[in-house]
Image (tube, rainbow, N blue to C red; front, side, top):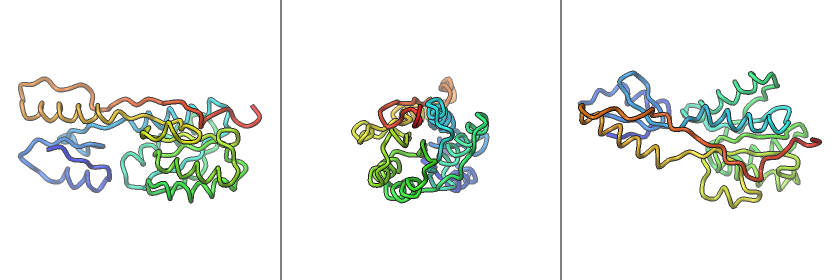
Length: 213
């Protein structure tokens, strides 16, 4: 069985359910007996945050996904640790619900702060809403505020401006999940490669040098 478990409680429930059927979990594994396949959210958040710091921004604000979602929690933790490693201030994160509406409302809050020059958003839908809020407030992107999203949805390249984002290879996640499941069914089959799927930073026009640089 292949199960999607983006929330922690779902994963724990699966881990506590002892089945005689091989189980592969997308997003996370919760014990040594549960196989998982997932995109590398920690690495993606690190790449996004380091990209913005490398452009000269004094810090990076974060619109996070909802607490209790594995990918959101991992991106939040990695964003914070990357800022701490760089020795820059760590702003309070803002929590959305993955929707463009939540990104818009949180973006409106950030747009009123003159010290906000760079924002890493935990998914592209919320980034879309944040871009709307920044444009509405007259804050130029990337002239005044740089924005990086996550997932590289098909629309990301066609936003105004085109969105810098972290690309997750969902097709590869699906392929590895199936291979992993087949290897568990057939004990004689060799195990597949690492189930942590690499991610790529796709740099577009929504991120640029910090104002004044």
